[in-house]
Amino acid sequence: MSRRGLAAVSSVLDQAASSATNILVLVLAARLSSASGFADFSMVYVTFSVLLGLNMAYVGQTVVLEKDEDRLGAVCRSGLAFTGAASAAAGAALAVVGLAVPGAGGWAFLALGLVLPLVLVQDGLRYCFSALRTPERALAADALRLVCVVAALLLQPEGASAGRLVLVWGVSALPALALGLWLLRPYVRGSAADLRPYLRRGHLGQRFVVEFAVGNGSSQLAVLGLGLFATPLAVGALRGATTLFGPLNVLFNSANAFGPPVVGRASGKRGVVRLTAAMGGVLAALGAGWGAALYALPEGLGRELLGDTWAAASALLPATGAQYAVMGLGTCALLTLRVLNPKATLSLQVVFSLLSVALLLGGYALAGVTGAAWGLAAGSALKATAAWLRVSRVPARAAEPPVTTAA
Image 1 (cartoon, helix red, strand yellow):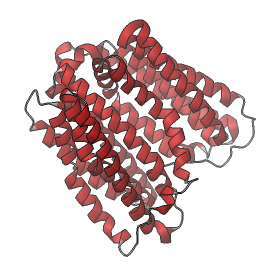
Image 2 (cartoon, rainbow, N blue to C red):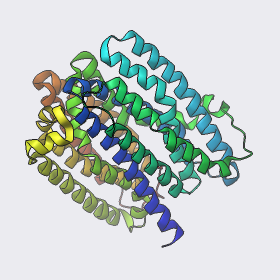
Image 3 (tube, one colour):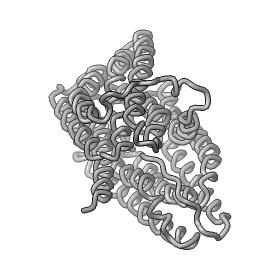
């Protein structure tokens, strides 16, 4: 296998390891916790997911876009230093919030504040290795992370509090963090960290933060809002249902990461659309099939996966399966636009991500958590429809050079 092929395989496997870690953490937490305990854990994990996405957008994306190989060492060291400083500040704020919030939920937020620098810096190493074109090193660290967190959570007693689970999850990142820093050391030796570029107005990461906020962050914050203004049990049910679709997230992320260069080789608009439409059809079929298979699971097996949360989450599987089916079509429509007309995606993300949030909250107001799940599905369907309509209006000419961003 060529060096490029090995790097592509390592990148896909690393994404799979990272996704498997998130899936297994939620599955094990659901099995160990009561429904209310998993709701508290889910609130904290959604908060972490938002912070993780913001760090990926502001720091990770700018690191992987660095073209000057002579500066890569300094860029990686600077990015990790900024991540450490920013996550320490955010962790301190979360700790204050945790002390102010009564009950088990407050202790869980306090635990997140304590471990946040560990988990964010460990995740940030992935982007350094991607920029250095050594994804196999990221795979080694993330595989160790997966093994350690699963082993640590399996050792916890049934009925463990959300705060304890969060603390164990965070501390278990230490071995992977140490390995990643050791593997990175040869590339950053002698380089100095400079945090000033991240503090300047006009930093490239600010644009990526906007795209994340209107794309992924808005829906995450809306789910978090359900827990604050409605009930944390709704967050646990939604999070439990979407956790079961984790394998499809690996495919969606891989399509976004490696799709543009492959699709860009197609001949003209017709060739690009034909290829992406076929990909979208396959992903939609997989989403619908996976949802049907999960819905057909016996209750005993479902409880083995999600514990007490299964009863609430299983009722959402038809809506979540429909959402992932149309998400497959939407992902490939946005991939098409990224190749044919990269500037056309931001407006779609803004309008239809905000519409999805409105449908989520409106659905909850009308029909509870089931309505919220169907609201998300409707938002994804409208977004996919609008994206393909935008594709149809792109002039039939040669595709522009593909624009890629590392996932």
